[in-house]
Amino acid sequence: SGCMDNQKSADAGSQLYNAGGAMTAAFIVVLHKNPSPTYEQLIELMTKHLKQQGFKQIPQLTASQRFNAKDKIFSLEGGIDSNKNEVIGRVLRKRYKEKKSIFRKLRQGRKKFG
Image (spheres, rainbow, N blue to C red):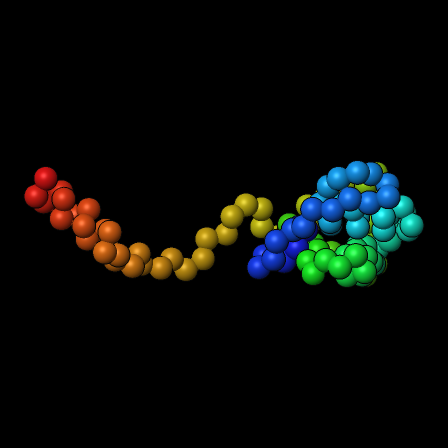
């Protein structure tokens, strides 16, 4: 993601191409200088580049599986790891009762009188 959930991603350009997002520009510049960073290095270098360019956004990494970001090399061409999750699919946890809202009460009232 180009930034944290409470931030906005900025538009920018770079010497390598004309327009795009600030994070995309940082991604391209970082990989151009260091083509085989670990995931941790990639995020750290992108964050550093964004700060140097005057952007406040902080790139985020999200994955569906756990992995060691300090050791795993980032690659656009590398193989895909097989799924190592113990459970595949959505895991339902404790259900909560729906809170009665004023809108729900109004809808129920319409059914009675409409």
